[in-house]
Length: 303
Image (cartoon, rainbow, N blue to C red):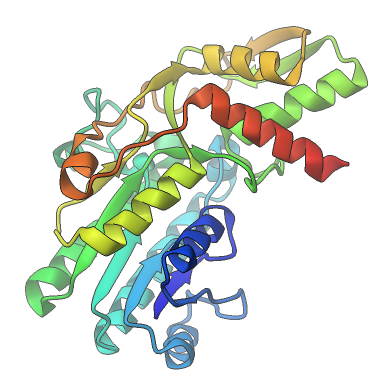
């Protein structure tokens, strides 16, 4: 049995589907279990009798959400990870897959980001509490491997997008926020949309189903304590991304950049060579194709 925390969420729902399609038995706990509470975590293990755990549950969001919830994001994420890893150890779990975040990398990390650079500086300030909470869990995973012989694996995905994403304007990440903004402006006949920052920051995006494939592959084939980047390896500026989303959604108005708002990290692109070497995975969905699928899904939900 494999427990997948966050298994009803955006990424987790795809991971659960792919595991089951490969014949794995899966337990996806509901929100009835508060993973910040050790007693709830122990009750979850008692209910599941799982041999393996994939920890995906997280408190997270875009730049605005990180600024508003810096303390909550740190507290929630570090407690969930600590409680789950310790309970997994006590319950004799044979493998624990901890999913981290690209936000853990230093603000001025050399591009492309290599796994060994994750400790070489402080993360970008707007998402540092979230990133450092996840970074601490890498240390815990490696310490538990060293002291207890626990097979803890740590994966570092980039920004994800795709169908089933969170489109709430208060907490969504950049792609769903842009899609919703463009479609609503088009529907209302608005002549312009406003974008945070100056458009020069770059990001790397990974289609959610590709990421789910990577996680399942790592669960089945990867057993090292060294962290592994999970990404597309392709970089795009926010300005180019906005133009692409506007084109796909049919928005033809003006695009105004608010340089008074934060850009976030200046550049993001991962070195993704180790994932291919270690367990034969690489992304297959190009950004344009993935964006079209995401827009189509969102429009279907709005009908």
